[in-house]
Image (cartoon, rainbow, N blue to C red):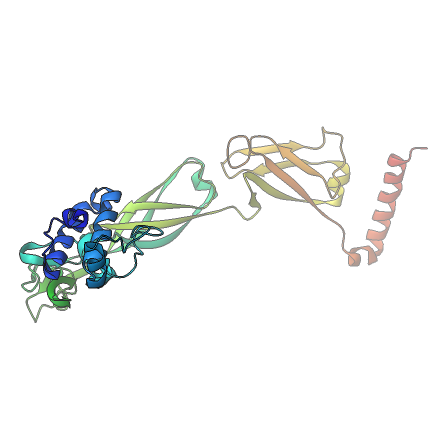
Length: 353
């Protein structure tokens, strides 16, 4: 039988080293992660697992099939003995299929990782009155710039901020060299270094910190807390993440998209009616005339004024807080007579019969 030998591209008298070498080449060429055919890749592993084992190879040469049922039970990588396990299992797979090949037989640690953007977080508070028409706020931010007096390119990492070192690994009879990249300690990964040991401007750091004033545009009618993400004006690959908190006036509070207002009324105004003026955060004065409504203002009275909430279609909800006379006020003789007369008049109004 010569099928397995043909699959690996070796002769029947091939040595173990020749079989291993052929297997490596075929595995890389036909691996599914590299665009190869999965069925072909399974056959390559089945052939290798058979020919790499002396007993299985002898049985195969005599016409038997020591690899009944195929060599890839399950998901295609848990084959019985041999295979990639002969080369160190996951390490071999990582070298061939998860790392990029470097010149002269070296292996990198993999694709170069991009530098993640740096984020500077700040919080500002704006009044609700300011956001009805939009506004602009000033934000103090700390910026870092190069020291123009002494900052030079790092001679160790050549300005990259990264240094390379090599690690040699031995697997079976082969040696592999990995290139390991790490942060340059000489410049702390910045790629620049203060070459002047007596620089007073930057205190030998190569960087100068300063406070800058940044103008932030607050969108109109942004009544709920929100987050802005803006590019840093001075530092590359850096963003300023600003949490904007919208504060309602003391008499108001937000309830979803509705704006709630608590109106304090005396008992007399609640009973006899009154003229109410509400200073809306938008600057508008809203007038409610209960003298014309012919209604009593009860403690549980809630008034909805349409389209006066925080967004279009939401309401201004007015809740009335009736201020009742305190007990000590009734202890005064003059007040007693006044309240007694008021009670008689109210009884006459509400019970005319």
